[in-house]
Length: 80
Image (cartoon, rainbow, N blue to C red):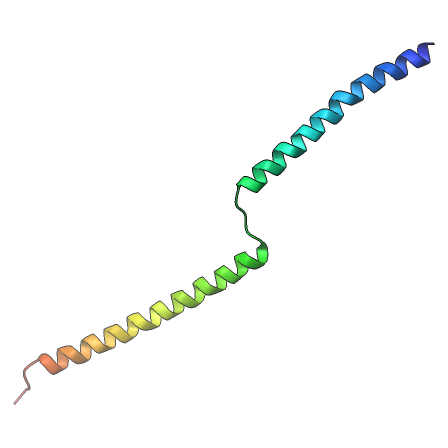
C-alpha cells in the first residue's frame, strides 16, 4: 500500500514537470520563430555579397579620384 501511494505521488510530481517542459518548448519555439533568423548558408551568401560590394566601392573610389585628378589637370591653365 505504501508502495502504491509512493508511486501515485511520484506520478503526480511528473505531470507538472511534463506540462512545464511542453509549455517551455512551445514558448521557445514561438520566440525563435519571431526572431526572423536566417540560415548559416544565407548568412554566408549575404556576407560574400557585402564583401564584393565593398571591393567594388573601393575600386570606384579610386577611379573617381583618378578621374578627378585628370579633370583638374585639364582645367588648369597650361604652363608656358
